[in-house]
Image 1 (cartoon, rainbow, N blue to C red):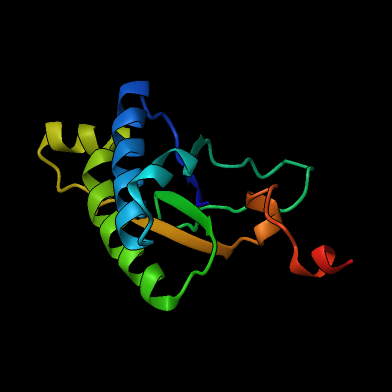
Image 2: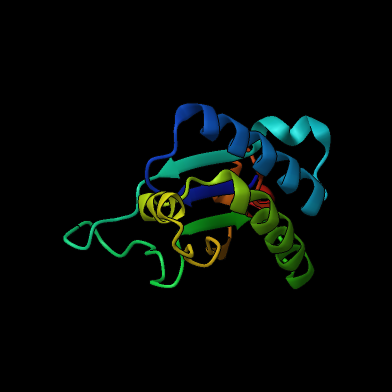
Length: 142
């Protein structure tokens, strides 16, 4: 089932609940999942990785983006990726927290930075990773 990781700073718990609910709805719709599969969608909120980390390569947020959403699922076609990207970015942009400098700029009447940008990364999952009960047809014959 799909795993989603949102790399972001300072998202309040109430906002995380709203974002998670919206992402679940988008995932069900764009990946054509059944409603009963709702509980098999995993969403994690992760602070952006620090540059000094030593525990291996991790996704980093591109410099021109404010947030990154990593999506791992089965059978990711280009059509599914495109549909998910369109819906998720439209949905997330107004929900994600603005940077403090944008708030201060608005208070001072200074033109704010361009709208928040969300980077998306898609990765294909192997069946064994997401479903430990999946039976490998080659093993069954043995």
